[in-house]
Image (cartoon, rainbow, N blue to C red; front, side, top):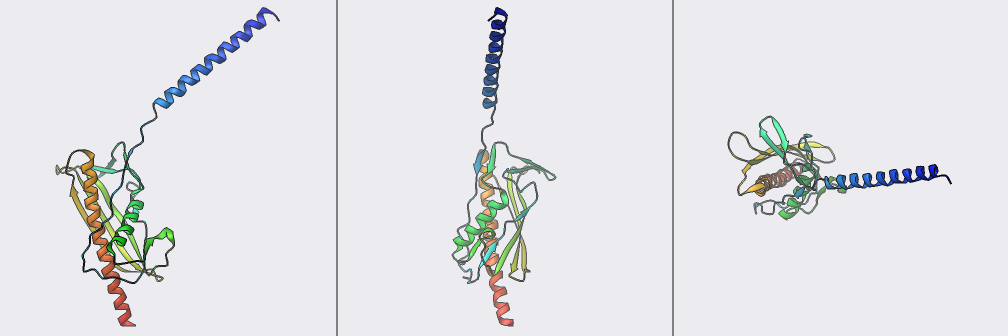
Length: 220
């Protein structure tokens, strides 16, 4: 074998080794810039209600609320002005906001102890009523110089089945200031605002459903 051929083979080997080293270095660099996963947050279901609520024997299906694209996300929304939406960095909800609210509503109905037949629509419950909702506000706000606060606005519609007729509709809105230091205070404000909203939704649904049930029975 000639020296020229040996020289060429050694050159190829050196180039291959250099390429592998460069690739390994690039791989290490890529790994080093992978961002940290966000800190995940969830909220709590409501567990205290008016003790005078009626106990009902009908079944309820809770649909996932409709929300605008800016709220239909796992990102935690922040409104720095009345017409803009931003998001907190490095934090997120454990689920898309409408799905999280749907789950917490179902748990809140269960915690009331006044209804046994309640479920999410995905379960396929054969229901007497459907609770449909619009999650119209679900963000922290920092405008008007009033400090950081959480706002929740929820429009509820109680729909009879199988006719799919709306028998009652109501909008609930609560605003809670963030107290305490740091982002934990913002989450606490969300929990308070959503908790008050869910309590009103649960109580309103049970009262309206029972009123419609009794009215329908009386007119038959």
